[in-house]
Image 1 (cartoon, rainbow, N blue to C red):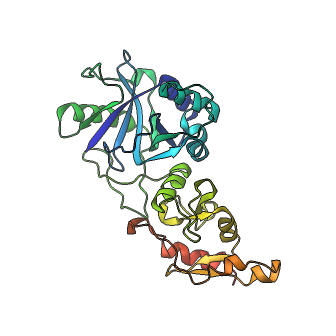
Image 2: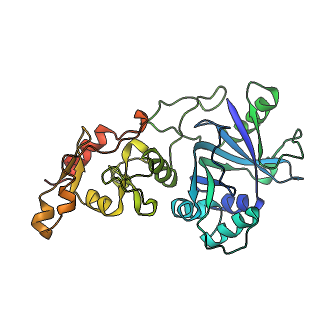
Length: 307
């Protein structure tokens, strides 16, 4: 198993350590196009800037993407490690070396972490082999002595805490310590929104709209009604279509075709553009693992949709 020790700002760490969120966005100010150091389920650990060469916490990697700063704030809010979007932007701009208060909706790299943990000061882990020239982070493997030592130290501290859980609709449960399986951790709301947005290639599944800021990651079965944040319980929908879907004016059948209720015409004497979607096959994620659950679609057909 791989693990990655990433350098983090103490203000970011301190804010989140007090907040104790279920997920965090470990943003990268440069908006680099890739992050290949980890696979889903592998740990990213937080290390403070030198000379504080200590691992102080971490989380489990679920996804990497590049997003406009406003979208990153909308998806994660304070889980970006700041109280307001303006504060988050000031921190990003400090590292980007741009004029503070930029009106540009620049891109930032987003490393999404689930089940983050934050160690108290007396549990920080010294990393004595840290090269002084490293500015972003350093990878390790549990096949090597240094990686095994770090992971054993982290695992020991986590044993007294609730262990991260797995996403049951995507993977089977497995051990987290010893020889961990690489799996997608149970997602929070922010990661659900971002991953659904990406697996649908930032395109509405029904209308093909590419306007990112009017697209919503819709739960097929609402979270408040027993649904999960699994991407298989999601569809990327334009905001108006999302509203109609949630209110049962349209649905998606188990064979991925759109069905539109007669109620639109009866109640509003309107809806021509939506009836044009009747029978259309929706856009599907390229990876079959992320395609909408037929079980959840059947639930929506039976419990929300009224023909």
